[in-house]
Length: 453
Image (cartoon, rainbow, N blue to C red; front, side):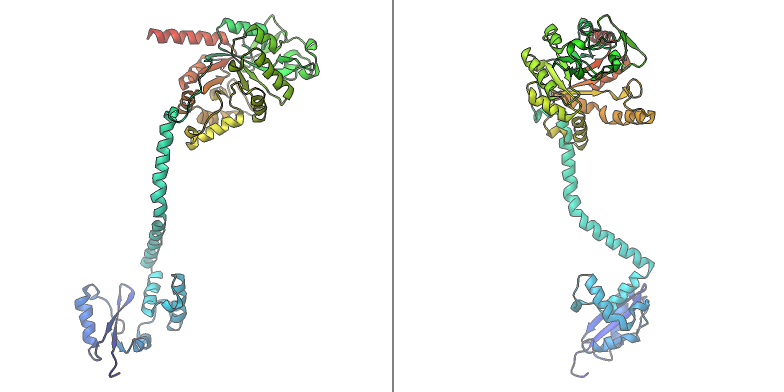
């Protein structure tokens, strides 16, 4: 070894980890002094460590590697001296290193000690968690501010939609709407019922239309005449002159157990209603996909020049599409699917940025479910529908947003004063009721109280 530089490797064991320090150009025979100097003076924190095999000297580290078996046996049998080359290569690949960049025996010893001790396992888990958090930090750095900005903008424009959209200009304000002409006080959809509602200063007449066999548009809620007249025939199977009279009394659909009576029992034509009340706003609902019926209604509306005050209404979007094509000048209301879409946009925060072509949101008030409105035959489903719809629909911020955009919100079909109170407190434009006299009394009372205050 004379004439060759020597290298000294100083090994010791500290807190269960085998450590080493390469010390180049140290003459043979002075290794013990160097070890004492390093351990006691230069590295005082390791002064209490337990030396494994003293000082090993060699040229270029060769004798140090050869002297490795003189160290205490590795703490894990898988890291025996014979397994060092394979373990070094495998660990190097797992850490993104090439085979030539493998790990030295002491480094593998430290890895083995840490992986197979409780404190080492905790340290490795913490290191992996830290590396994961570092990898996620760029995403969170950009995503969280973007999400916060989006939420703030959505809330800002939800309250100030006119900064983005020009609101619809209403042609009328329907505070009092008469359901089927006021079917709780007179026989539904008769001329007598319409006149009674007009006497109560109704702002809107809500009605449904059917088509007879001879092509006459009649005002009738049901296609089949069994409930209304006792005759088990469809309106479309009879000519207008063959239509039967209404029963002498009819149960009020949204007030079970209560009945309406009237002297007028005749079904009437839509044309006669338009002629009798030419400037009275009306909501015309089409229930079936009858193209002829849709076009005849659109033609009558044009004929009486009432496109601005007649509302297209339907539950199905496919029918509404045909109605808008037949007379695009008429305002139209939300269909069922469009209503669900409206709620989805609202809860996603997208509603302030989306245009709304509808001018009316005519919807049932959730509080009437399981009291006067029973959409399902199962009581449990009715109760669930009441809870879910109340949570989703009865949002004052949603109704106020629609009103600020010129979309009028009308709740049906409310027959109790407590329901009137709930609807108007939410900010509704108006109410559709079977009892126009009761709603008129409530409105007059509230108006007098407001003026007095």
